[in-house]
Amino acid sequence: MELMQDYSLSFTAASLMFFETEQIAKLYLEYKDWSKVATIVVDENYLQKGTISTRKREFAEIKKRLQNLEFEELEFMTTCTTDELKLFCLFLCAKTYRLIFEFIVEIVREKYLNFDYTIYDSDYINFFDSKKLSSAKLQSITENTTYKIKQVIFRILEQSSLIDSAKNKNIQKPYVSKELEDIMCNNSQYLACYLYSDNEINSIKESKNV
Image (tube, rainbow, N blue to C red):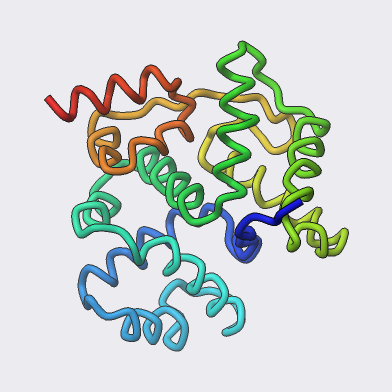
């Protein structure tokens, strides 16, 4: 079988990290210089983190999530509510890491739309095994890394309130404000991460084009 472009698994270095993401977005808006922001966050320990290696890893992931955003999207992050921020950071994770996006759309959303509101370990195992078939990276990782990937994915879903807890894994459709929906207009396909149906997404696309 031909292998597809492989997955980035570096999200295991940082979960949702909504507070840290917001703070780094604020710094970037202030300085417009990632090198300056890196100095403040990593060298000056702006976020009061642990070791310098931890600060470097987490900053690298947050920068990766933020660096392709438009100015108004960055600005939104610094003015929105905490619930909106968490959901926007879920979008950032889904956009940056294809494995997270595919798990939400193919498993979480599909179950929700079929009135099945609990994610079972077997759901994740079947999903992950199916992805391994076309991923050289997933085929080569250790058992510990496999466990870490699962742990962080469910932590991200819990922290964004898409599930009630990483233990129970009960799916919850989030409330999406008009402001958040509007800021997502250029990335409307990612409304699927908020468990929108295809019809809902298409309706929103059409309303924005009127």
